[in-house]
Length: 102
Image (cartoon, rainbow, N blue to C red; front, top):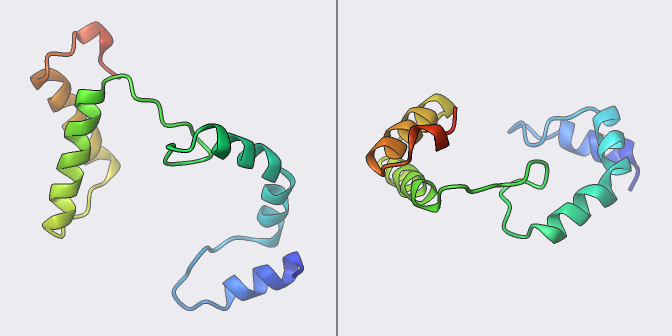
């Protein structure tokens, strides 16, 4: 299947699934081996683009449970909400100020 055919296929999807240009597809295909190697080296990473680094597992777990709770209520969590909740959990879980994320 050619890049053009792949691009046309996803452009025809009415739900907006995977909207990208043919040039973006070409760039990503050129970097495929790099992304594949990263994914193999980091099988638990949420994104093969940015490694998932956990410095405080207790804060990570609290955030994970909070997000699951919000999803169960049908709520949408955005980046700002997540950051504010992280700051709160860092305080509540006693993370020293000099070790808190900015």
